[in-house]
Picture 1 (tube, helix red, strand yellow):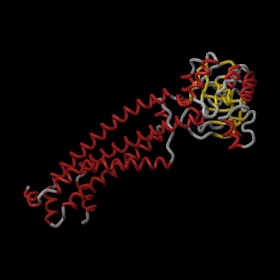
Picture 2 (cartoon, rainbow, N blue to C red):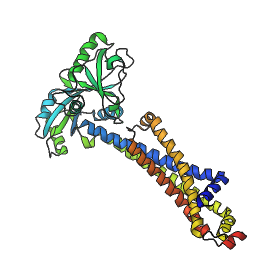
Picture 3 (tube, rainbow, N blue to C red):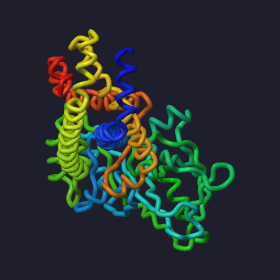
Picture 4 (tube, rainbow, N blue to C red):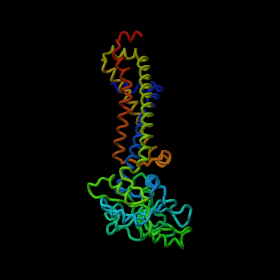
Length: 398
């Protein structure tokens, strides 16, 4: 009989003890992997959204910075305005290379003229845009979006034939979808300012409530700085030269979400550490009790020629098999929960969350299994060493 057969026989013969160890392994693996997937997914989501915006500074009306972040992170529709003349003022600042306006709109809720309720819509200026248009030109060719065409986030889909989404009664054609970010951009819609004006014109007769898009107002201005320009010094100049606006440096964007994420991470790490410590102690206690119960059996094995290394390894193999079984189930549950309850996680925790790629998920799964295996074997190591050093004659008499 080899040590694997011996270990498996002991596992099947002591069901209660095996269930306890397996449950501890399940908790360690599930908690560790679920936490890693969610926290890593939130951080990746924020970074992708920041990269997607592609601006060094975003200028919004004074007092609306938090609304802007809420729209980008959670997809909460916003509507605020500032004079369009600010675009020319910002473009005239020495450190600014490009300034592109955007207009933020929202669909009507519960209205038949809008086939998608409460959607955050972004209208951009194709003549000056340096974030959305370059990506669209690369994917669609030509000049990007034409009048009446829209691009949606990864969760936006057409509601009518011919890829049509009805907005304020206007039949907008969905051309393509952006890659997922895990934030509100996945449920947002992008089109040109000319299309926004056409939607507003059509809404007068086709919508329950007309859409207003003032030609002399914009919602925000995206700023691209000249090379080797310090963003903070440029933000100070914007404060000094343009009144009633708030410049948001890209590195400072999502600070509220990042602080919330850091606070959540500290809490989760504390809980994870406590769970891990209690699980290791419980597993160590179970294996100590099992080793004491099996002194005579192990003494007989020693008498038949099994050396100390064989005894120690057989106990560690038993621990490894239990950790793989329990950890595998825990990892499966963690992966299912992270995929099935994605929206619940976003709403409950108030953070963005992007599901990992297959490669990253496999890496995290392997990491979770390794952590579980090391934890269980570490807990079983001391009892295994102690019983393997027991004199066989003394063990057989007890």
